Length: 393
Image 1 (cartoon, rainbow, N blue to C red):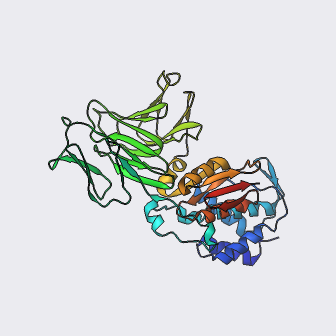
Image 2 (cartoon, rainbow, N blue to C red; image 1 turned 135 degrees about the vertical axis):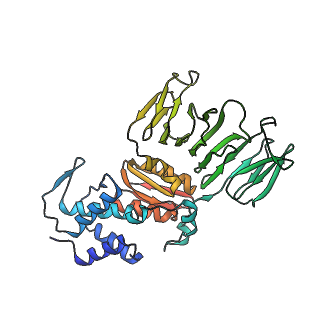
Image 3 (cartoon, rainbow, N blue to C red; image 1 turned 30 degrees about the horizontal axis):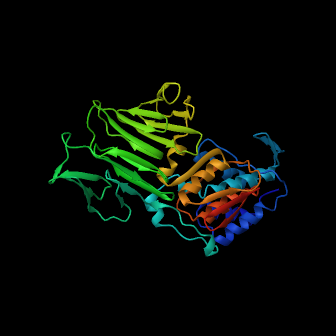
């Protein structure tokens, strides 16, 4: 038996990004016309291979006998249904192969056709600069130019995100007093800043970085909470150190991501370029140290144990910076923790929900659209009440 011709045409339109809301509804109804109760998302090595695989499965005759996929028996029609589901969850594989920066995507956000009371807009560029004296400035609403003055040091916001610190029109030097500032993002916020040494830092939602207005001495040291991506300016004579919870990351110049949220079980450091040393002081754990190479990811538990994962999914680790949620066989609760931070919503569970997903979603959609895609499995349901999301099997 073949996939109905009208369904094949709708699949083609969806892959091309031309499917209307009504056509998506028809695809969803076609998927739910199957009676089997078990549903699972299929996995693949790369997005391109996955797209090709889906196309072959959906547009050719599926005559094979039932096959075993990750321990679950699937009929030939269930394979097609699962492939359709993954296609919808990824929200357009081909478009996401070339992701746009988050700020550009946010400008193109469109409200889905749903009741207005269910809409919660995605997060955006929001941050607070906390000065050495404890006063604060909203960076997202502050215009470029003079922000404030700390002692005899003036703070200026430049168009590229750099906070310039000057005295009498000149850049501060090592002989000047070093003030410490903090940039903090709320839930539903993100921000990018360039430090005085040229290091670029991206902050995810509900995150912060504490840094000196000028790096002095033999090392450059900052402290973060939440999640941050670093592109460290190289300086072989002055290592760059990041304190994240109980762990410390030391580099000379490299690109890496640190996830150190309090509600996550481990502090994860993912290396994209260069080399870093991850250590746990004896006072905070067992005093262990590990060196990471590109493609590796360390995990530091709250007890101070360190493990290293080879061939880590670096794209998944930095997807947030590129305007995406990306997950591979990730449990639903970890996915919803990411979503709750970005949309500033509270997640409440009613019943046991133990599911794993593979796919991609953009961070520029309204929250109801995100949950509509996750609910296509038929195995989990979501209801939205204000800023509270209720999850049930």
